[in-house]
Amino acid sequence: MKATDIPFVKHIGIEEENTALSLEFKEDILNHIKTIHASAQFTLAETQSGLHLQSLFPELEGKVVPVLRDAQIKYKKPAQKKITAFSSADEEGIEKFRSQFEKKGRGSLQINVEIKDINDLLTCQATFTWFVQAL
Image 1 (cartoon, rainbow, N blue to C red):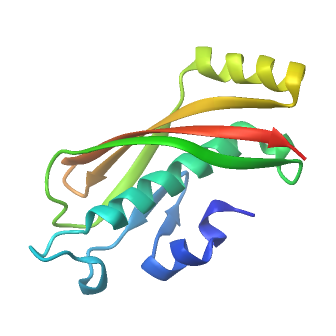
Image 2: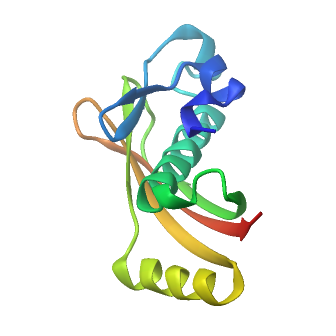
């Protein structure tokens, strides 16, 4: 299943734009101070990390179960406009994952995500650790 096909992701309105995901500034995802709710930002970041994981290993689609094991997130500035998530993983981590997976049929990988608004203001940073197990 593609990360953007998850019902909750659709429910809050996350949209795919090229290789990044975005979330419009809209009333139904705002918090009590009229900024994008922390949980909506978390969902955007977590979904972007899953999409990035899928893009790194397309050959594993349908052959593994990826499960989020750990998440660390820091909210930097209030999100007061449309936001977009950008993800990355370091090459050393990718190679370590490949090696683990080839040897044991499972492995872990960290994906880093930054969320920025349309003015390039960093609203949050996160690191997600995915555990991937062969079926």
